[in-house]
Image (cartoon, rainbow over all chains, first blue to last red; front, side):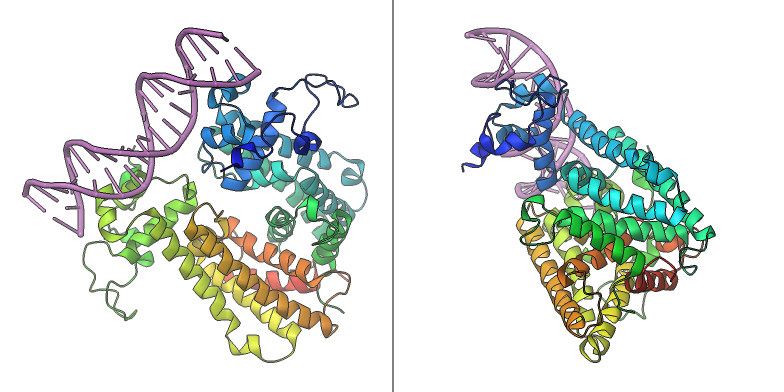
Length: 226
Length: 226
DNA sequence: GTCTATATTACGATAGAC
DNA sequence: GTCTATCGTAATATAGAC
């Protein structure tokens, strides 16, 4: 069992890409990091384990082994397991909501705004993959989980509004209700968390751009040739 | 806290619809049931709780409260939590694999076979909703979960084969790889477990038939009007 | 078949030394 | 900031009475 050594040390090379700049707010200074965990860098490890084992299936013991520090050391950085979940889902939700404020999502023909939101949601999902993955698996057992679920429902409702507009414009097929269409659309997009892996992109499967293109093309024009 | 009383008794009226016929194999005899649990009727309760709280988030205590019997009584019917998971996922997988043996899935033009499998998978998912829901959320922490994941991958691969055939026939859009198309297709279908509720069908959202129609139309022709 | 009581292990979190 | 040791609780599962 050498599992606890893999990617364990806070300064181990294979975690650099995922490591945030320490307390320094500037993202242009990734160098001056101390050889210790911050809540942010600990979150990176925790979210990975949460996604591997499931949130409920992950114990603090699992986290401590994965992070390479003791259980009690984790409590020095965060108040507990639930705070890690809140930070992770919050990050995912912030990324998603930001899409709705983009100019392309607020101006122009509704169906084009829907298409923009579709593409950008796919992109944000790929960019923030571990955080969105965790968000999409939340069940609602704790207050934090219910808070995340509620924010997610708000996001969905905003998009339903867009689909309704596009339907009123006559730009969406009339035999599918906008609410149902939104659910199928997000079903397709969100399923990326089940198989998309950035490290495999371009080899075992398509690159991020190709995936986004495929999602938009499939969702709006369908799989069948005409 | 009256939660443990809701739908608790094995013979309570609100569980009748979900209750299987006892040892009698004939489904035309729902009457002659004894006022006690069978592994099958216990499974109905357990799967509902698993889906509400997540498998890892469900303790035997939770199950005993929901079933209205003690923890130790559960062990009289099944060997443990994992056996319940295996029975549930096995049932879901059997339903899915049966689709691939249907005549419409083995004869005719590939693209039509894909469309048939799409519709039938949607229908089986709605008919066996709790079991398929549980299957789709399995993570792989135990041997049983890995067994279920492997069978599920087999099913996916069978469908990828169908999509490849259809693509070779020139019936599928050429700018989306068959493997990717299969993933997006199943992403859309499988997302039903997140929102489809049989009791709400026809009121809060579309009926089962309408949902199946919408899935097929969206997946093959797309959301946008042409 | 069901129960109460309990064995045993694992869990989240804390105390206090270094 | 990290550690070892430990507390109190909750988990899975079993023993044995009825």
